[in-house]
Image: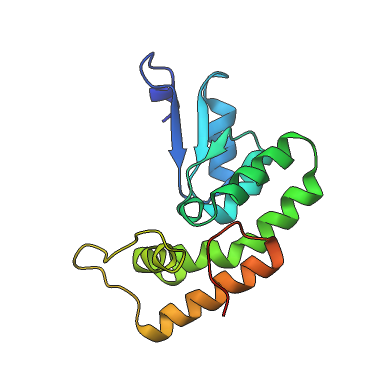
Length: 154
């Protein structure tokens, strides 16, 4: 990867491994102008701390303002606020990735009055019970983070 980073037509990488040790090595060994983005929400705050330029996150589809706010707070040196928001957003991030997968992300988008729709085969849309669990996670996030969403809390 570090050899590829020196290629004039390759300007950056998205690393979704979530391995901070690996991310440190990428940033340390790559040319200084090589941009590293993180693609793993749990690693987002830590990645910023070791020099990642930003992120491409599934949770940003559901909570874009909050993901941007974490970066802005971090850049302003408001590390405690950035970390606190990051921690509060993690249940949503987990729900739309590792916990419920792509189907969970699609269900969350549907719950927020966006269009998620059905995932492509062979993936599945969550069961009604799982959709209700995702809904509860979104409601909780709305209460604790001020999640800027169009979710109707009932």
